[in-house]
Length: 174
Image (cartoon, rainbow, N blue to C red; front, side):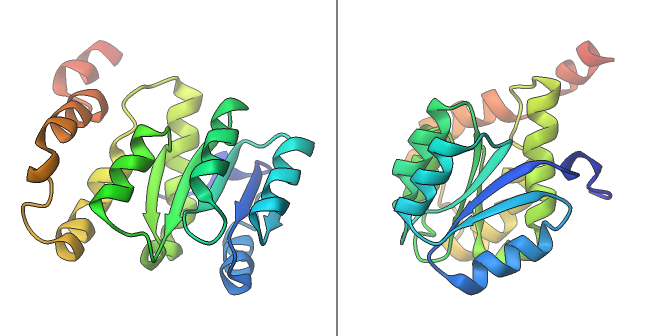
């Protein structure tokens, strides 16, 4: 995934109730202009006061889904971050409610790359934003167990059709 030029100077809101996660993310995203919110209320204030290119939202301790809805209404791309809410149901809910990515806290060291992918897809106006999922699928398979997508097969078939770049898509682009 390489350099992070697209992140340079981008406005990023990070909302998480764990101070060490806020500090770690801010450090990893030092090329960005970062606002850190340690609570739902602080996140709401930042969303109402500022504009952002992207938001990183913890699902659990800060009412992440409520913040996701607010970010979506404001046209802000959102990445859901989770440790305790790591489940197929929360993954599906995040996607259905408009998150552009769903990143387990185990993958925190790669956060800049996930944000870069979201911003590049947005910049290119592409609807095919499933790259993050295919990068994380081996992790999900390990954590959730093989066959975890079978329970919600219709959802995943639809997701694959909407978010996977096909050979035909590439030919149309080229």
